[in-house]
Image (cartoon, rainbow, N blue to C red; front, side):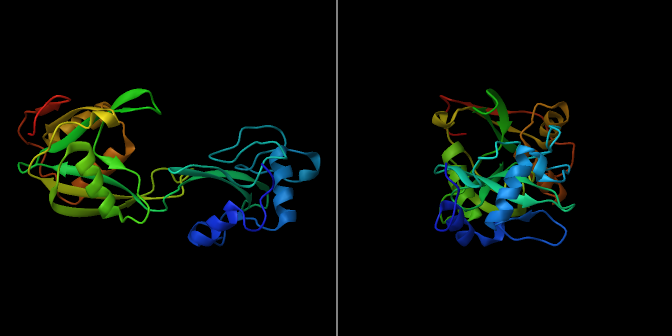
Length: 267
């Protein structure tokens, strides 16, 4: 891919989302001057003329970088290096606080709208979980409904969409639980967290890789988190926020479980 100059996808991204390109005092500066960009490329490549090195930059001696800093060829592009309708991958030329230069990778949502995470709560206070197959890990996970934002949609609108799509439910009450940065070292976007009170739900959305929907009281769900049966960071985060906001009651709830399999009917 050729170097990005004026009117490229990188420039259009900067114009559309300037908040993602601000330089804060004492932080990691994004470089835009062509000469500085080239110097950052050389530093990432580890050429002798690159000068200093620093943790987080791609160093001369070949030590592994941290987080998203990328040890790449000097000809590697700076700017938007991949984009589809879901994600945009960006490589920025940067200057680290100590003065070292390098290249840094980050991933953004192409839709530029916040994703949403929904904690469904039944009329009896039980938590609704879905068993979801995730391609990235090649395994099944216990999760709450969640998803990426749609173009122009608010977090609340995306939350309602995900609740309907994944478990066929509508909320009788929405409770905002704030925002979450899922991986501040790589992902440039945030998601919004919600709890939703529901009267019931439909069968699993098998086309999304969901095979079961279950309801469990908070004490059992907390045990699943403690035992490592729930490993989804979004799910653990929304459970934590709900607990701290007093939505999950005490820790002595009743036991029992309602399960809707892929062929089940409305619960």
